Image 1 (cartoon, rainbow, N blue to C red):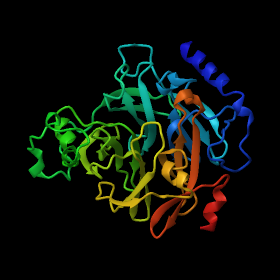
Image 2: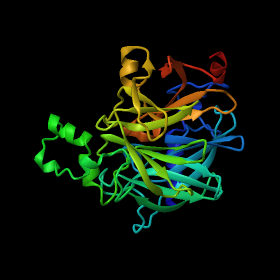
Image 3: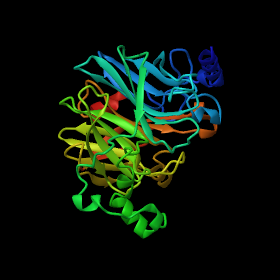
Length: 380
């Protein structure tokens, strides 16, 4: 009954806003986006799965006020055949009232992503998971599985990835470094150098690495990767998942060490892999970053800020933060940059910024559009 009550509160909280309709067959970045019930879509920090002609959007279900920054309901799912109009499919993964479960109401669930495993026929969800009452100290990632795309998903466990494993691109010469946090002043030049050289990798070697903002990527050969902000948000890790997508193989690399990246989104175009991420400024927006590689494991080459526009737009990523890059089915080299415009004082009012990814001189480029539709890809 509690979950149903919260759902009703959530619907009522944005019911008035739902009167503003998205125009037929178009996207309006930052506007209220009603679902089939006329209620603003509640799938924040989300990701997308395309299966059998249908897009499925999974995201954080928020409630009204600051309380919505924690998980009181779970992960919401919506479906669409055209990307403009979305049907509410309900809660795919529910939090629990059972305090013995790590997925208890009041924990933090962020950036849920779902992928389909062709070998097992299962749908696998991973998400950033922080334990109730611990702030962001746990830095874990959780996994859940389902037989049907819309759920219900069964929570399996949460872990710190790759315990007892060294990154594949971490030199032997640094593995025995004895430098510790206690000997360094945070943010000093010496501290930054030590972080870049794996200070936190060594610290977390036994218990497993940190995993905060995350995304998933399945390559054309079926190999799945879990990409997450690690090492106190100073370095991204790209980790290979097992064949069933339910665990880590222990094969992983450090990406852009010490560059303070979070909110990673990765996609493939031709033989190149592209990454769009953000800096680390909490809920406040900041300039986006991009990079390119020949393999998900890297090495990754920075490409700079992909945003084009006014100084404010470039410095704030259009007042948003990346969450996913969606390949548009049936259109060649067509990708949508998905981002969130966070509203931490009233979490349920968070907005979505979707923009087409353009390319200039081999680099992904993002430009503001007040209104657009998928026809933009036919003109490239």
